[in-house]
Length: 77
Image (cartoon, rainbow, N blue to C red; front, side, top):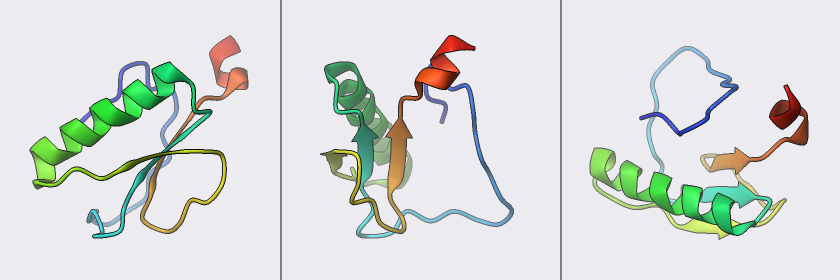
């Protein structure tokens, strides 16, 4: 799946599994970011059969979370 306007991606080798405690963390918690997180959660449900919760906030992420972050530095490039 692809997120609209994705400009940077960090990847590694291996396989991916959505853990039972996985969440989608959006920061900053602006309405557009929250909508993006909710859309991604819906897309994930279509792929793996369950919808991870969307959490708003800067910190508090944990292993297995999907983090969507807006970067002003990337927005300018």
